[in-house]
Amino acid sequence: MSLLGKKFKLIEDFDQSIAGDYQLLPSRFSAIDKNRYVLSNEVGEYLVVTRLQLENFIRKKVPANTDFYYDLKSKHFLFDGDSNVAIDLLALKYRTKAQRIAQFTALHLFVVTLRCDYTCQYCQVSRQTDDKHAFDMSEETANKALDLVFKSPSPAIKIEFQGGEPLLNFSLIRYIVNEAKQRNLLSRKDLQFVITTNLSLLNDAVLEFCQQHDIYLSTSLDGPEKLHNGNRPRPGKNGYQLTVTAIKKAQDYLGRHKVGALMTTTENSLTQPKAIIDTYLENNLDSVFLRPLSPYGFAVKNQKAHHYDIDRWFEFYKEGLDYVFEINRQGHHFEELYTQLIVNKLLSPFSLGYVDLQSPSGAAISAIVYNYDGDVYASDESRMLAEMGDKKFRLGNVHTDSYPDIWLSNTLLDTLESTVSESLPMCTDCGFLPYCGTDPVYHYATQGDVVGHKALSGFCSKNMKIFKHVIQLLEDDTEAREILLSWVH
Image 1 (cartoon, helix red, strand yellow):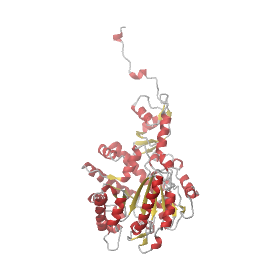
Image 2 (spheres, one colour; image 1 turned 180 degrees about the horizontal axis):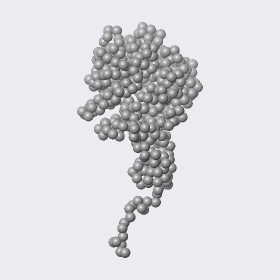
Image 3 (cartoon, rainbow, N blue to C red; image 1 turned 120 degrees about the vertical axis):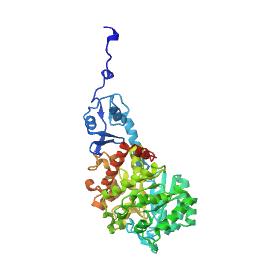
Image 4 (cartoon, helix red, strand yellow; image 1 turned 60 degrees about the horizontal axis):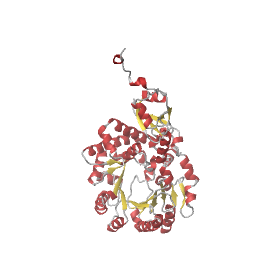
């Protein structure tokens, strides 16, 4: 028979590799709907797969030289004889993700006073009335706290002033900023400052100081006037007008990028996601954080944290996010900040340092709190819990304890050991583990245990719902995916 009479074989006939000729790398999976699963690995690479694909992968039945095989290989779910750098590359990505642990504490919160001129019913801080100067931080305490701040190995330091209302002790803020900048002449760190304030006391002197020292302002804006004033009552009932007037003044003086706002969701907020977002747009703010109520401080004493459940909040969140997408489709770049965090965790190789989404917990590793009296806490939430009378997470005091005493305390080390998600029941097998974290103070406050029963955890329920929703948007909605990708920083 001539060569022209021979039939050519298919390319598969020349393939020497066979299904099953590969090794599995560590991975986890969780369902995202009735038909699909998210498959993730140690460094947060993920694939959305069908049940049949998942079974074939686990049983080593994925045919070589298929698109699915190459996806699994490129994202470090398997390696074969043609890939001798897979594990080394995986290790490099893991070190990149864990880099923030070696850099250590970057965010240092100074509670310069507990005094406040508002009487918010949901307040997470056990505030004091504005005439109780005994609840102000002293210069001596501030200096001791700064001694600890500049012992941190982190190349970047952010000092955030909180309260109460920190502008009620503005003279101390001036002192700390000037003293920190003087010390930084030797330390040469990337030093930033933020004042978290209700803006009621904002004046030209404060703005001039903020401009001179490149200080950012963060405030609270809960939505339209009736909702904001209902959530955040103030003598004179003019809290909303004071806030929006001050936001505009600060934006004009410092620049729009120097002024941010956060809202807190209450039961009255749940029916108003669009009105809340419109309020942010009306005030030239380019993002909103649709966050749930935290179970600390006066929010617990008044039982406000239990007036709505996670399912109701999630419907509020989804409606708000859909509206944010609509705004972006109209050409206005506007972000929902928690979703932005999740998308960056899903798609970025770098750790974001967001305290609530870290393993081990970001308590003291990423952020630490110096209370007005010098007590040191592992997180802002643990300080709030202490103001309710429970000092379980108190790490020491700046006047009596050294840097090693505080950061190597049994209280902190035990907490961190209990928050390594990779070893926790229900977390260790969860496909969302690389993107999640564990909040020891939340679980202690709600369940009396730092680990918590994950099946009963509002923290877990909220995050799993969001992870599933965001992944479904990335996979199924082309327009939403384009918008979400524009939020990756």
